[in-house]
Image (cartoon, rainbow over all chains, first blue to last red; front, side):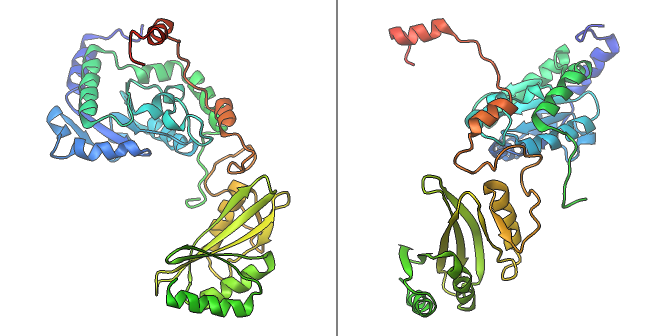
Length: 180
Length: 176
């Protein structure tokens, strides 16, 4: 079955899914600063049927705000693999696209979709809350049309993604002296 | 210079000969010292109220072949700050630990070992602190090329060049 073929039930499920999205925001970069106005009364994300979620197990969207160091990428992959399907990823800011101003840094990765599938990118440094809301609405439209298929691509091309993760990180497993 | 700071400097002059004093700011004094006089100076300053070790860091003077170690001491009594600096050999970077004077120093020393490759005698805990699975030379040395490392480890997105757009900019049709 092709990635974008859906049964009637899946179409109905996608329609309902798109109206109740829970977002896990992984705030590693400076882009996190644009989220408080988006979530709170000024722009009020909840009027679109979206809310913040604290844990990956209960979230639909993984929202990556800005640059990721090799160290945080390991945690992001952990988080992404913990999330229940269907799961969607939004890359926010130019750092997730091509490295942004940290393109030559020894510590930060240059493109996020090399390691985990990204459904939607928001370009800019920084994108304004209006751009975020536009992106969320676009993601909802994509889910309704059955185009947000990153999680299926991840399953199909799991070896490719794993190989890329190993190439840049050496090992995805997290060793942490403060918790071991 | 504040009165209390000049009093401290007077006291230091009794311990250290030929003190090299630079006034950085109203409340900030830099002292450049030979290696063996760093520890006595730090101890004297600590006893004189400059008991807060804000930072230990290093500067890579690659042309001189030296690392400059910088100890920043702060006083909560008068807000004054002392920068104690000393130069060590870049090829075999080694100094003594101050972790018996400030326990927090062991983390700064680990960081310096990780980012500059400096070893501290008396501090054997030199596990990596920030970087995970680092596989190259210490990254804050000036001869390390971060761009080359980034290209090798983190592949970039390949863009197709928009030749027509560029030609229009050159011709002046669009404002580049």
